[in-house]
Structure formats: structure tokens, C-alpha cells
Image 1: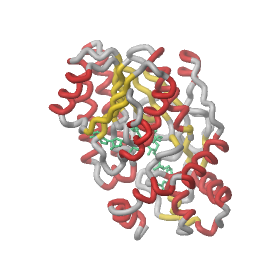
Image 2: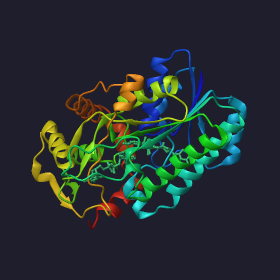
Image 3: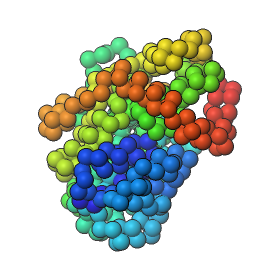
Image 4: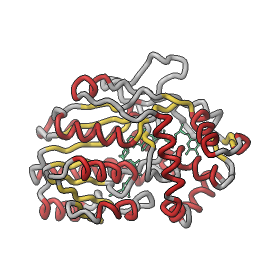
Length: 339
Ligand code: NAD
Ligand code: DAU
């Protein structure tokens, strides 16, 4: 099978490339990425040594470039991870989120349709369902929970989902969608909660917790997400939506305290800062459909996954130290300077 993985130089895309190369020796992968601030070719150095992988630098919003790649390669499967992915950046400036996440998806689907791709998979998010109250622990997101978005990021992802479903219904386009909860693990850009807190703790600088730190996220180790997508590609039904999550809800403040404890750093580093605008209170996924239909179950317990992740950041300092210079420094100052 020849697979196009877009957003391959980002966090989950790169983890997925490594997962597929290890799991399916018979498959070939083309990793496409435009290398925005979030894309890092260093992450793919290991894959580049494998003859079954090639990297293509291209922007999914560039119709001509996407068309050329599809005509050269004749993909069997497309998995679209490419996106602007950070909620805080979408609050600062939504424009690029609409362009990449919505128009980019349309352009990819048009190419997949034209070249007869057998399966297109859209990597979506639980954020399309909005949020749940903190005091109703019995409520979970199912695939039939209404779409109700909070941020420009989630609105752009929901728009893409609707477009994928419209292509499926109108053209019989062979698409699937997955909506996963918060991922953590190696290669995550240190603008997101867990790697940002690890990085700051190691530098003995304040750990900026939004509001009172009581917002809840449902954390999944990235490899478990990759495994779920792999199963959907091979066994999932065209036209289906699958929620992915491992029943692992945690308040932000508790995660930050666990990181400090593991690193032997004091809780006095925690600084409560102005809350995120429109901050979603709680996400919680009901994964019953993917478990029942495909037999997917998460394998990594949070305590183990968090330790593995912290150990990875400790062992791979050059990877993130290269990142946290230049544009990142300006970003950090802008977002956290006067917060
Ligand atoms: P990321 O920001 O780490 O990576 C995104 C990648 O897409 C980067 O390598 C970037 O260079 C690339 N990209 C951005 N715009 C592009 C464009 N126009 N053309 C080509 N490449 C482009 O994001 P991530 O956390 O790996 O998320 C991947 C996907 O998974 C996204 O679609 C996101 O919405 C979804 N998702 C993420 C999470 C999470 O917790 N991180 C959870 C559920 C779903
Ligand atoms: O749920 C899936 C989503 O998870 C994905 O679709 C997004 O791409 C991904 O970025 C993530 O979104 P979140 O907004 O939940 O992740 P983030 O790491 O930005 O924040 C997690 C929680 O931590 C959230 O409640 C905000 C809080 N936070 C975040 C940062 C960066 C802080 O308190 N301080 C911070 O500095």
C-alpha cells in the first residue's frame, strides 16, 4: 500500500510515520509537510534512512503542487494530519487556520477524488464537540454529540469535518474521520501544555497555568492514537466517524504537579495566569464505537506514558532546544510576557 501522510513533520504525523514503518514492512510512505513553525525535518531523520519513506515539501493549500504529487505517486491511502493545531494561536489570528484546515482539506480531497484514492482519512479532534460541564462526570462525547465549537481552531476543524462528510455523501468519496482527545508523547512542540511545562520546569522558570488549572482534558499516549488510525485505515467503514480516547481525564493543575514531582522541582514554580479566552472546561471521549467495531484499546497507562515522555524530553534536549529559539522566543514573549 502506498500512503500519503500529510503533516508528517509534526507531532502526531511523525509518530504515525514511525508506527506504520515498524508495523507494515510492505507499505511505502510519502510524508508531505510545508514545514511551518510546527514542522521539523529533524524529527523525520530516522524515517529518511528507510528506503520505504520519502519526504515531499509541499503546502496542502497549493493546488498545483498537491496535484503534481498525486499524479507522480498514485496513492492508495491519504491520511491528513496537516493543520494549524494550537488553540491559543487561533485566538490571536484565525486566518491561517481557515486556509490550511478547511481549504487545504478541500484541495487534498479534490486530488484524492481525481486520482481515485481508495481511502481518505481526516484526522479531527474532540474539540469539534465543544466542551462538557465540570460537574457532570457521566457526560461523554459520542460520535452523535452535536458539533458546537468554541475556538477558531475547533471551528476550522469542524468545518473540515462537515466538508469531508459532504464529499462522502455527494460524490461517494471513500472517507473516514477520527476525533481524538489530547495527545502527549515524543516530538510534541513545546507550545502545548505537557512539553511546555517540562521545558519550563527544567529551566526553573514559572509554569503558566491558565485560570485556576481546573480545566479537564482526556489524555492519550500518541502511539495509541496512531494505532487507532492504522486500524481505521485497514478495517474501518467508509463514511464512518470514530471517537478515540482512553478514559483518562485529568485537571491541568494535577498534570503540572506530576511533572514537577517527577523532575524533583518545587510547586512554587506554578504561576496562575490570565485564562484562555473561551476556554473549554472539560473534554471526555466515549470510545465505545471504535472498541466495539475494531477492537481498539489504549495500551499505555498515563503514569507510564508521562514518565516515558518526560524521559524523552530529557534525552532529546537538542531537539527542543533548537526549537525554542527565534520565532518561539517571540511567540512566548507575546503570549506570556504580560499575562
Ligand atoms: P502539529 O502542529 O504538531 O503538526 C502539524 C503539522 O502540519 C506540522 O508539521 C506543520 O508544518 C504541518 N502543516 C501545517 N500547515 C500545513 C500546510 N498548509 N501544508 C502542509 N503542512 C502543513 O500538530 P499535531 O498535534 O501533530 O496534530 C496533527 C493533527 O491531529 C491535526 O490535524 C490536529 O488537529 C489533530 N489532533 C491533534 C491532537 C493533539 O492533541 N495534538 C488531538 C486530536 C487531533
Ligand atoms: O483535544 C484535542 C486537542 O488538544 C487538539 O485538537 C489540539 O490540536 C491540541 O492542541 C489540544 O488542545 P488543547 O487546547 O486542549 O491543548 P493545550 O496543550 O494547548 O492545552 C491543554 C490545557 O492546558 C488547556 O486547558 C489549556 C491549558 N494550558 C495550556 C498552555 C499551553 C495552560 O494552563 N497553560 C499553558 O501554557
